[in-house]
Amino acid sequence: MSSLRQFKATDLFSFNAINLDSLTETYNISFYLSYLARWPDLFSVQCTPSSTLMAYVMGKAEGTGTDWHGHVTAITVAPEYRRLGLAQGMMDLLERVSEYPYDGYFVDLFVRCSNKVAIEMYTQLGYSIYRTVKEYYSYETENAYDMRKPLKRDVDRQSVRENGESFLVEPHEVQF
Image 1 (spheres, rainbow, N blue to C red):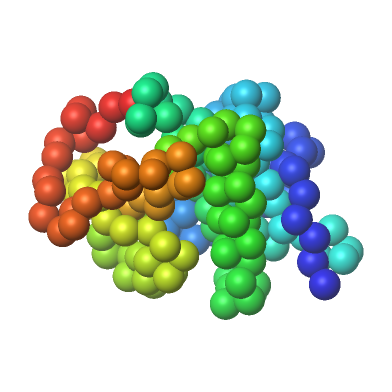
Image 2: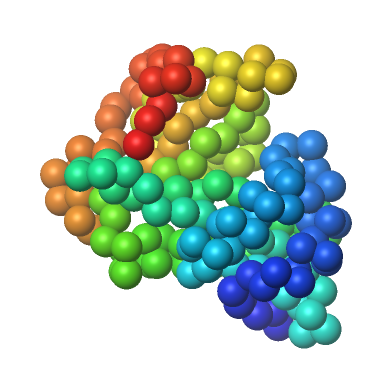
């Protein structure tokens, strides 16, 4: 049995094994701490009964008007704990918090176009491709999909579109 709890600053000393994945973006310590200070309710970890970190999700609230939303900055599961449904539980939590207290219209995330496993998982969780961001991962010149899931507040489903993978934008056009 594992537990889901809020991320603590001391977790930064224990989560390297989770980040040792070529598809996981790794940030500097001040970046993680700024998220923890500003959006602590959108930053969670999954732990074993012995407190070993298994996975984490880091998010934020951003945008204005009907673009006000929750954003998944990073979600990753250590290789030995994959395919257990941990990511789904963490995404569910982030979506619930994005609805209340943040009252967002949708949740979005960016994923490498080559990361087929993640794209399939997000699709199964109700996300769809809103647009393709050209060379989002500029150091590797790889495109990203901006995937979104509408929340209850988006009654008219303005945050999603059909054939989003065909809607190409430049990175500087992605603003909230």
